[in-house]
Image (cartoon, rainbow, N blue to C red; front, side, top):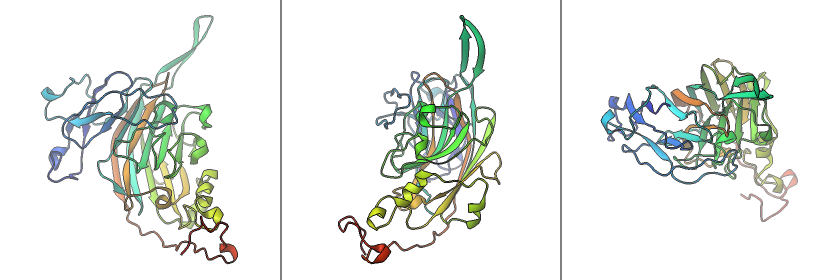
Length: 364
């Protein structure tokens, strides 16, 4: 297995040890401890190993606790584990081990309320081999790994890590939205067959879930994500463009309707998405034609910190299926578009704005 990567930082801390040009090309120690050890990148300069965690397959719960840091070392001699294979420039989210999950987060919150445009390249390879047998003879063998990776925006923690297996590393993370690139079919989660891209969220009130009951949109109109290098782009604009409504890739689900009718809406007040609407677009390999366009109000969906949240990636392997998941490049740009102002609904007890329950209503 591979346990070395190369990272580039953006001088976010001008006085820290990772600042400036020297931050590029740093060796990163990411050695495997057992077969179920998760990883994340830390902004600390020294390694801080901690106990490993067994990651339950398809667990609906978050997994609190320590993880093993992935941190830079100044020379080969000081690394705790000698690299077995050079695999940079890349950051490995999962290795060829079953029942694991991994996550990596940019070390400071990014502005997402005013829109963003992010592009990244990833490679999923070395899928596990599954063979059918009859009378103790193999009749068919196929290499198909699991489970995939996700681009995640979350307000829980810079060390957030969710369930492995079908959970794709983000299931259980609170206050989050995930764009998943799923390579394995889990019928119990109501997924499209095998290869698909989807947007999952339960808002800030509940932990996220990979179950497609909580998907805002999904598509199978993508290439085989388990082969070759793929480029993905995720763009959020805080103001909905009307021409998007007529796009062939525009879609919405009952989960989106939930955020238009939840919170105080039933009592004559305002739902989470009652202050306006933006749009989320996802591109795979073709950067001008989205495979998904869906309405989204990110500011109303998540409990943001002054419009900011942690951004990063999660990945996982399954109980009997696994694969390597490498993040090759990543670019993130804040758009800083002013959201259109929509004043909240004033409940005054008159006509359509009559209050069903005075104790629960939103009042001026």
